[in-house]
Length: 376
Image (cartoon, rainbow, N blue to C red):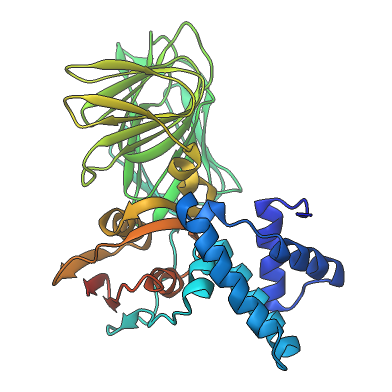
C-alpha cells in the first residue's frame, strides 16, 4: 500500500535523511514510499515499466548481498535526494556515474539566483531593492512604496496618481540571477522571473484600464475589477483580463511568446489573431498565428515555486533557463547533443549540483567564470 505523503513532505523527509536528522517514524515512512514508488512523474509512460524493472533488479541484488545493511541507507539517501532533484531513477536504472561539470575559471562554483531587483522611479531614480531597508522606500503621486520583511515590494494607494493629466510610471527590473515579487496599487500580485522588466503606473486611480508592459517572464495574480480590465502588453501580443492567474513567457531569445492560464479566463491577441484561453491551456504565439493546447500547468509555473521542470525538453531550452537563473552565457562547440530531458530540479542548488544532475544524461559541461561550454 502506497503511503499518504505529499511531494513537499517527501522532499523534507528526504533532505532530513540526507543530513542525518531523520526520525525513526520518518525513516519508516520513507522506506514504505520507496517500496511502493511510482515514477510516472519523471518519465514518459512507455519507459516507466522498463525503468522500474531495472531499478528493482538492482535494488534486490544489493539487498541480497552481505553488504545490504550498510548500503541500504546510502541507496535510499542517494535515490531520494536525486529523485527530489528530478532525475534520480534514471541514474539508478542506468548505473551511470556522471563526470560532473569542470570549473576552469577563477570561480569554483556559482550560487543560485535570489531576490534581486532594481526599481526605477518616474523621475529616473534607480533603487537597488536588494540593499534597500525594509519599510517605506519613497512616496510618489498616488502611492507609497514599501519593502516588506519578505523582500517583496508593495504599493499603497494614497491620492490621485495623475498630475495635469499625466500618469506616473515605475519600472522594476530583475537581472539574470534574480527574481522579485511586487504588489501593485490595486492589490494585483506579480512575480518576476530572472532577466525580466515590468513597467506600470504608480496608481490606477482615474484610469479606465490597468495596463502594464512586460518583457521576460512573470506570473500574475490579478485582483478582480470588472470595471477596469487589466492589460498586459508584451512582445507581439496583448492580454486582457478582469481577474485571473496566469504566466507569460516573453523572453526575446525564446522562439515564441507562451501564455499559460491557471485560473479564470483571458483574451489574448496579436496583429492577426485573437483567442480566449481556458484554465489549463497554453497559447504559443509566434507573432503571426496563435496555437492553443492543453498542458500540465505545473511545468510553466515551476520557476515561481522554486523548480526547473522539464518534459521532453531539448537541451537548448533547458540551458536558456539555467543560464538566466545563474547569470551565465552558454556556448556550444561541436555537434549539438540530441538530448531530451524530463524531470524536476530545485532552483536553490548551486550550479555544480544542477549541472551534475544534467550530466547523468551524458552532457559534458565546462564552466569558465560566467560562461558554460558544452562540447559532446
